[in-house]
Image (cartoon, rainbow, N blue to C red; front, side, top):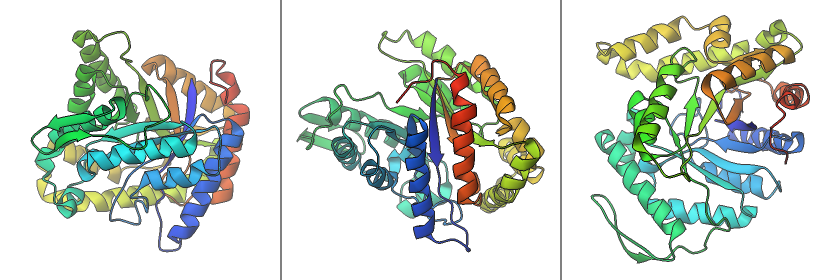
Length: 353
């Protein structure tokens, strides 16, 4: 079992983007020194409180120059907002710069305001994502690639530079809706599941649907039915210490999420949206710990991960040590070190760097 680290990089009014990037890079470098296998920043737009990282591959390029072993993954690149030729070029360039350490995570996007500001109809997100994915994979795999689709047409395009990794790792999809879990099973892509989007009680149905569709599709042996789980993680001397460290940040996460939902309140006739609002309004530390987080002292975290691994057969746990963006930098670094020292060794098949 592998362990990665996630970065969203929210930035409050009391912080600066420069500070947040500096601290996040320090945390990612720390992750390599501690033996974490990979790092996974996410693409977000237009809201500093949520994130100041619209271009995760730039963050990974800066990290590549400061590290030598840790794998560099996007979790995720939002394909409908990016030209696929440019995505392929940046992936290949980052792979060359990093000595062949790139992993490509992709998704379709979910925030209506993002689609509006990019001028992309949200109704086209699925087809744009699939066209872009075909182009990125074709350019990386072939010396020349032509493509004729509804949104993109390419005639004998050559990718320069070529990525060092041959074959390049299979792209991994963000699966947030039941439709996407099923679709990625049908298409045969490995997936990310995120507990802050689909809490633990909902994940069995989602992951089972993915695996059912994967098996039904009868994919060739080289296709991997693989699930990575991304969730808030924090290790402390006790659960009370963890609560003291993360509560303000979790309150900020809750308020940001409610504010993001506010423009959609006219659509509360949608049952899933009603459920989301009700869940957020009642969210507290105890609920986060029960439904989406791995919090507590090291033995508690070991037991939680073992149970989740047994239940969901996950291949990688991607740890989000700063959900909400307000956990002090020193406390994040300390929790990462405790996790690496006291939790990771209990998983004998964890890949050594």
